[in-house]
Image (cartoon, rainbow, N blue to C red; front, top):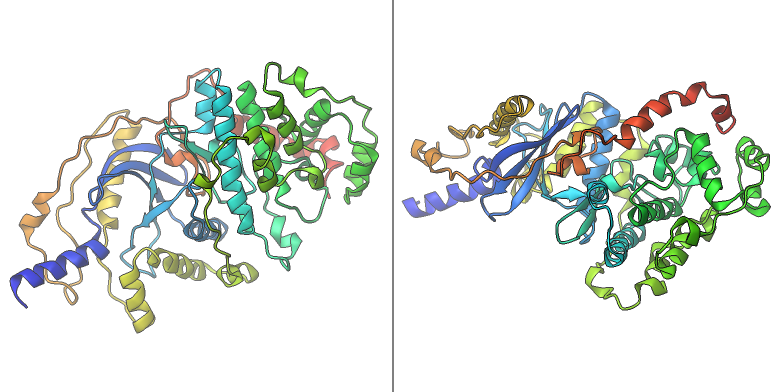
Amino acid sequence: MDRFNKGEKQSEFFTEYGEASRYQIQEVIGKGSYGVVGSAIDTQTGERVAIKKINDVFEHVSDAIRILREIKLLRMLHHPNIVEIKHIMLPPSQREFKDIYIVFELMKSDLHQVIRTNNVLSPKQHKFFLFQLLSGLKYIHAANVLHRDLKPKNILANADCRLKICDFGLARVSFGDAPSTIFWTDYVATRWYRAPELCGSFFSKYTPAIDIWSIGCIFAEMLTGKPLFPGKNVVHQLDLITDLFGTPDAESIAKIRNEKARRYLGNMRKKPPVPFSRKFPNVDPLALTLLERLLAFDPKRRLTAEEALSDPYFNGMEKADLEAPVQPISKLEFEFERRKLSKDDVRELIYAEILEYHPQMRQERQRDGDQTTFMYPSGVDRFRLQFAHLEEHHVKGERSAPLQRQHASLPRERVPEPEHNNAEKNTDFERGNDKSAHLLKSASISASRCLGVIPKEKSETDEGSSEAKNEAADGSSQKIAVLQT
């Protein structure tokens, strides 16, 4: 093999496996108990990206399964209003890796911050934001997926007003024969955006209408700048809902299967509904009519995402721009949900998902089976050092240049040893200006905490924190016990 061909093959190998010089990390933009997020430059495309490092993925099997579900879903869902995983770094060993490095498109903010920092959004922004959310949700529901945790913090935003739904950590694929008891037992989504049927365990199985309710709450928050139902606990949540909509009618209450929840609502003092024109003054009447149909107390009376997009409120909007073909999700992809998994089982499944972003290695694995035992070349070691270096300075409030790669660790039996001078050709990129005070709070891999966002004022409070405190007191409340199944 001549020198040119040899260099070309080596370059191909580094591109596919080494990855050690593809991403130049700039700074830490988020940090929390589950991981660290850094902004970076993709040297192949020049694009700015966010790299999420998830620490100790397999410490808890339940968290690892949640990450597995989300990686799978984001690989199969492709829509302009859904966040995209661009790449996942290949770990050096399929049997021993603990951390995962996931590359996302970098978004500047999230809808929570947009609402907080813009006192008055324009009617055009209201309409465009809602249109995008419903377009993304129509696609998600057409794929038989329920998001189950829609809220402003789980909707990413850019300066051009483009939105992307993220954080599929609680999402599920709805198969007709899925046992409802398994399907919903881990539902712990943010209370303020929960549909009323979730507040009281009204039904044994839920529908896409739970996501529609969340979208309605988000739309109302856009209109007023404040959460619509900031309940302190599940009983307070239902009280706030019935304060606006009035006491549910007898027909709606009769449909509730949970006897204790049905009795609680049936014994509630009669409340008249508040006209939306009074609750939301100076708002487009078409917007309010649509909002009422999104927030129907009875889930069967709520619009679907597709029906909502056909509402007169959206007349004149180009709907073809955000359409995307829906690929059916095979039940085989989620066969693992039906069996008890060990850490090694989940590790193997996550590694198989990572290989979807490394087609050459996936082909070799399919050809050779699981016989390979050597360490693969990987950029993970360099990233681990860089993240540790940046984290230290991030905690101290300093801005520090990341450590640069010294050499690539490659298996000698597969690739010739790289020349040392190649390591000195890394390009220094100008460090970005994005800052973040946003913390990681869950094992989810795609929430807005993966992004650089506008820092909060010190006086602001996070509804998630207050909810957590209030939720802790829920167990001691006799009123709440009434609603439990």
